[in-house]
Every structure is written in C-alpha cells, then in structure tokens.
Length: 282
Length: 261
Image (cartoon, rainbow over the protein chains, first blue to last red):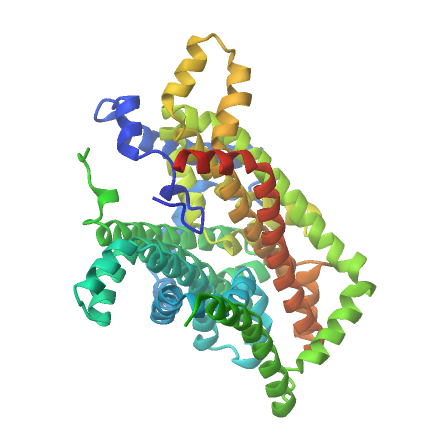
C-alpha cells in the first residue's frame, strides 16, 4: 500500500499479522490483564502524587475527587446537555465536510487538469491552522452554532479532500482501461471501479476528519462562548475552579475516546471486504 | 488535444486560477466595502507594516521560538521513548492504553490545566503545551517504524555480534527514519496550531496574542494580517520540512526506486 498523504501510523510498516506471528502470541488473558493493570496503576500514581503532596492538591486534585465530582455531574441535566451540544457540533461539522470534500475530491482526483489548476490554492489553504479563523468567525457569523459548524467543517474538509484525491488517483489504470474498452459507461466506471478502490482512503480520511472536527467544535465553544463542554471549561477556568477544570477535561477526553473508537470501528467496517483487512491470506 | 498544448494549458491553469482567486478577493472586498473583510491590498500593507519588521522581534520571534523549542523537545522525547517501546512487546502492551487516551484528548482541553499545573502563562507553559501534543505523532510513528523493521536484519546484526549501541544507531534508527519523519511532519503542523491556541488563550506576546487583541479591539487589518501570517507560517513550515526530509532521506528514496525496478 502506498504511503498515504497524512503519514498515518496505521498505514505503513509491516502487516500486523506478520509481526504478531513473529513475536509469538502471549497467553490469552495476559493482554487484557496488562491493559487493566496499566490503567489502574496510572490512576493510582495520579492519586498518590496528589495525596502525597508531590504536586499540591490545589493544583492537581486527586483522582478520586475528580472522578466522584464527574460522577455527581453525570446525574445532572446540564452535563448531558453540554455533551450533546459538543457532539452535535462534531457531527454537523463532519457531515458538512464529508458532503463537500468527497464529491470535490472525486472531481479533482479524476481530472488531471482540474487537479493542477487547484493545486496551489489547496496546498496553500490546507496547512492554515483553522484556529486562526476563530476571531473572524466570532465577529462575522457571531456566537452561534453556525460558527462552530463552519470551523469544524473547514478543519475537517482538508484532510478528507486530500485523502479522497489520492484514493481516486490510485485507481488501477488497467482496470479502468479494461472497463472502458468493454464499453462500460463513464458513470458506471466511477461507481463500480473508481469509488470502491478509493474507499480505503476515504475511510481513513473520515477517521482523521472526525478527530479534527471534534477538536475544532470544542475549540469554538471554548473561545467563542458557545454552549457545550468547551464553554464549561472556559467558565471553570475563568472562575479559577481547579476541580471543575479537571472534571471537564476528563469528560472531553472520554467524548474524544468514544468518537475515536467509533470512527476506528467505522473504518474497519467500511474496509471489511478490502484485501488489507483480510486475515489468513497468503 | 496534443500533449504539448495540454501541458501548456495545465501550467497556465495552475498559475491563472490562484491569480484569479486573489483578484476576485480584491474586487469583491473593494465592492463590498465591509468592515470585516478589508481589501486584500489593505491586508498586505498591514502585513508589511506589522511583520516586516516593526513587531517582528516582539511577536513573531517569540512564537517561532516556542514552536522550535516545543517541536524539538517533542521529537527528541518521541524518538527516545518510541524506540524501546517499538522493540519490546511488553512495553507496548503496557503503554498502548495511555497513548490511545492522550491521542483522543482535544488539545485545548488541557490549556487551563497547563496553566494551573505550571503556574505560568509564559514560555514555560506554552512550550510544555506545544511539546506535549507534538510528542504523540512522533512517538506513534517511531513505534510503528521500529516495529516494521525486517526482523532478519536485527537478528543478523545480533548474530554477527554487533553491539546493541551500534545496532540502534546503524540499523534501527535509520530503518525507522522514513516513518519517524512522517510523524515529525504531522507534529510540525500541530506545533503551529498549538502555538496559536496557547497564545490566543492566555499570553502577553506572540502571533496568537496579536490575533486575540485585534479581535477584542475590533481592528480588522491587524487581525487579517495575523491570520495571513499564521497561514504563511503553516505553509512554510511544511515546505521547509519537506525539503529537509528530501535531503536527509535521499538515500531512502534512491534505494526504494532501485528496489522497484
């Protein structure tokens, strides 16, 4: 598989099966056991650092305090409303990005001419950190959901666009030529050959775009005063409420983890038929 | 269409489209006369006045310094920790949950915590914040790069009695370097983003600070000049890194090409 534009860790290197076979499988229960032990010991270290006074409890509330405060807040309406608002920003931003980036990526990827015509603007706009747009959105679109969605969609658009373009360009030319010489119409070629072979790239692009979308939805709330977990963090920070700062950060991390697991599962599912996901093949 | 005319048209489009977009921007802003969207020419004049070079040392240099320090620390830590984790299955099992956790945390969530923990809104906090989030892409790619090394190579080196130190320097590090470079490239663009985030949130100087202040005082031209500068920084960082990578990994590309033939 060619190295994908993002240099993502998962796409290069030796096939996982080969590595696993080489290293020999550990006994069945060892892996989950280490997983649990590793997390438990990290939480314990946190507790000890704070209770033991290595870092003052004023600066680092103990793990048990943070989690019990989080547990209490999980019984409030406000907490779940904040979570829902942040998730809504993520979902809308990602949806807009997919709706725009995939068709445009297919268009630019399948035409050599268009790709070079828009190469410079894309190469220039892509690395611009979306956070730079926050003050502009704040002043023009205002403190509204559309600012959050715009920012999330803008950030998520670029990685997905580039992945889609790479995917479309990576189509096996022999397959396309064969279809053409058999008289398969243009649209059918796109639907039957180009799209399926671009799917792995698009799925990876969606996973990356999903993470970006969440970061920017949260950032928009933090900096623009939109309701959601970001705003909760901003209030806690402005009030100097250290415990609450940690509670919100942990809550956001859990939302991030959930979205990460969701998008990884989606990617795997979308690629189930793809050779890279098959096990037991030679 | 013959090929030469087609190539010429392609190159023409590659130049014409960006020029047309910029011209459209200038014309649109001149006609719209909006206070939020100053003319392109106004932005460029402001850009020159601010950054070339009246506030260059006061705001651009501190930002660049933070990026360089944070990125440098992250690369060093990521490689130094990534190699042993990549080589040892046990370390990998032990560290994976933590790496996955921190990777899922949106960076701005840690901004207030970094201030509380470090008692600082100065360089210490900014550099630590940048370094922390730039660390993970380098770490992950180093781990994957080391894991992907052909085991026969490592075993051959071992059976020839090449000492561990030499093995690491001459075999593991070079073999993993293409992937480490990919991680570093991701980190570098992340460094620009986290720099802006940290300075925008709390700070006393820097490009992100100028962005925040000009927003708060409704000064559009400096705000646009800051947006353009951040864009230019992100773009230049990427280009410079690609150039450096091409030079440093020249042996790798050549080798790959030879293999493909």
